[in-house]
Image (tube, rainbow, N blue to C red):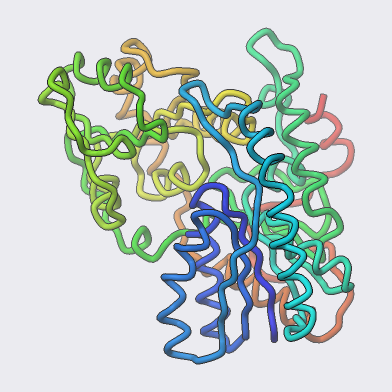
Length: 394
């Protein structure tokens, strides 16, 4: 089959997960055109170059213009993000319209796969091509969640939850099928939805858990000096990623700033006593798979991260806090034995379930079959009745 594959470029998690699926599709003999924005474009162009050498003409990676977010110490700077995207809109439109005209003239896909990416999705809908969604975001809209997951600390329905759910709902409506990856497995509430375990890099699947004494800290705000001051004052060893390698004179000897390295990061993760990071899905899913307790610090107003963090806590795999404090970190580290016991019960799997679902979906599309409410391939989720769904939504 000829497949157009769209990957959203905000953050690298979508790119690393899409790489797993794309390489599987190439191994199955499919021909792919991959469209991707942001930093993810350079990553996928590089890692898929070897596949292009092995099978000339089987894969091409093209850059599109996508939306981007600007962060400050408190999370997403909404105002700066909006104005930055508005300023870039004319050039982005020219880029994307130009690529659309080029693709129409030379590449006719049999199916489109979107990892939360709109350009490929719209291409599919305009040309009446079946589109398959593969991502983690659709868990907000297509699964049923307990009411407590959607309320503020005061018990009121969280406005950020409502915004996040509707943002996901309108992103890729009417797909042929939705394959949703997750480390938590709530009941599926909508048809044409299949829940699978996290999509894991081969390096994570090959990693062996060996608990050490350091705490791995992953930080996206490179100038978060208060964090380094806090860590320096604590009696633990911290390996910090995401803040460069230049040490200030007042940085404690217990804090080591690590340069980014995929192999180095995975080795530090598998041997960590625990991990402290944001509420992003990719690292959280990898930590859960490896059995490393995690303290999640979800970004303000990003409810997908909040949902991840709440499930992490509810399942006993770790804890979450609105910000990192000495009290929060000490309470987390004092409870590691309990988190590790819960993590030992996690149903670890590789990518076989996901890839089996992908193969079935593409096979049925290739045969011209109508959309089905459920796949025959094994999955992690069951449908719930409307009555149960309504109760969960209260």
